[in-house]
Amino acid sequence: MALEEYKRKRRFEETPEPPPKVETKSGHRFVVQKHEATRLHYDFRLEMEGVLKSWAVPKGPSLDPADKRLAMQVEDHPVSYFDFEGNIPEGNYGAGSVMVWDVGTWEPLSPLAVEGKYVPGTEAEADAMLAKGDLKFRLNGQRLKGDFALVKMRSRRPGSKGTEWLMIKKHDDHVVEGYDAGDIDESVISHRSMDEIAGDARSKEWTSSRPATGRGKLKAAWLADTLARIEKKKKASGSEKPEKSTAAASSEKKNSPAETVKHNRGQKNTKLSRQAKTR
Ligand code: MN
Image (cartoon, rainbow, N blue to C red; front, side, top):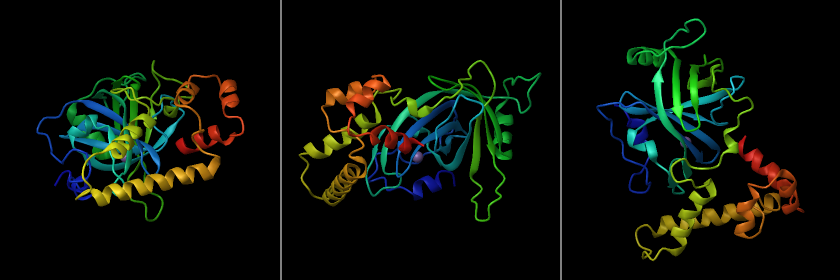
């Protein structure tokens, strides 16, 4: 049954994620969700066959055809997951913050290029290409635009789950060489940064007037984990987030590299460790 795996992995009384429901009609939207789980990744989802076909892309999609991005196919998600942004509580599958990084529409392309260019294809062609493991499509998002392919890799490794695909930008007018999704840390729907999305959950937990019954245990576990993580970060690099005022922190992103270095004097690891996290 469709969405069975999605359902099996989640406890809907604890996670704010939408319940499993297969739609009878399929639209043609796509979404990229930046997901700060155990490892940061980007979930690329295409609305198809009444669900969101989903791939986890560790380095994020690229507009540079030279990048062949590993994309691990994951369980189908319900269409209502499309605009999910928020925090999956600790102890739940995929715990961490989710940002809607890009949204838009997609259309299938013909399986073969005509004089070097791909032309719009049919729904049936898209279904067949997906099944075959060579799906070509055109995106019209706020950030991702143009022609792409998702190509399933032949599993060479013994023990490979056969879920490894490559996401590749085709050559067209929308190519951006050296593209790095990690350079953009802003939700297309709420315009919040990842820290701001995570911060909402933190402040909600801290100021909650809810009596500590029922969910109290979960709350405590969540806090303990967060505190442990903050402590670990402080120890790791002289802090990943420099200890400074909120104003200084928010202006840092817009500063030139030289200014950033000045702000971070004595914390030279800051930029490096932040980069390491996104790779
Ligand atoms: Mn994910």
